[in-house]
Length: 313
Image (cartoon, rainbow, N blue to C red; front, top):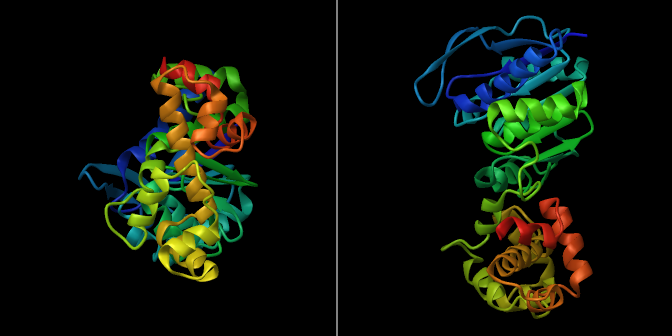
């Protein structure tokens, strides 16, 4: 069974957001001949200039029918592509007929503008997650995820995360053994250490400026204490309801999620620093116990604390 894959590009794309998925599917095709037929499509077709100045050749959008998988690239060009009504209409119609639709990095903005992410969980590059949440409030943005699958729609974070996502697509299509072979050929992890979290997103919760910079710095120094919405709001001199709305609008995450992420990052650093017992680390970083911390690690990183410690050794 040959699966037609359309990689959708536009002026100003990040070239690796297209090249990574193309390479993953191309190598999978080498291992399992007849598994994939790749096509690069763009509004108008022809040579499409990336943000680096290098060009990619693309066919015109054409008929949005007969595709198994749609992959929309990302990059600075999405700031214009998300207003390209011809492109959006094509993506919308192609996705309605395809088995699945995916985006790499800020390609999520194109899917969101086409209405394909309404009511769905989605990932994008951590630096643009808050903007995605502000522009498209119907999208449930998960800013610390490498990739997210919600039904037939898959979204991923920046550049190499698009390869992670495509390896998962290959595994679903032709099996994990082939996906592992593709990863080895690309010299990337099949399942990278740290699971499904963008570690950069954790660091981004401690900005040097902004309305809540002081609050986040204070919270980081007091993770072992009770840090519920009421206390955080009181620290800012705001009502809990107003604080929760304002905080989510500025940071892209809820206050509870932000505190959990800060605790996870602190606990991860403690695990790497030495052999302290898990119960003590959990208590010092604000988790109720080691089991609670373990569940949070698996949700965020895809691995328990012991595995993270082994990787850091």
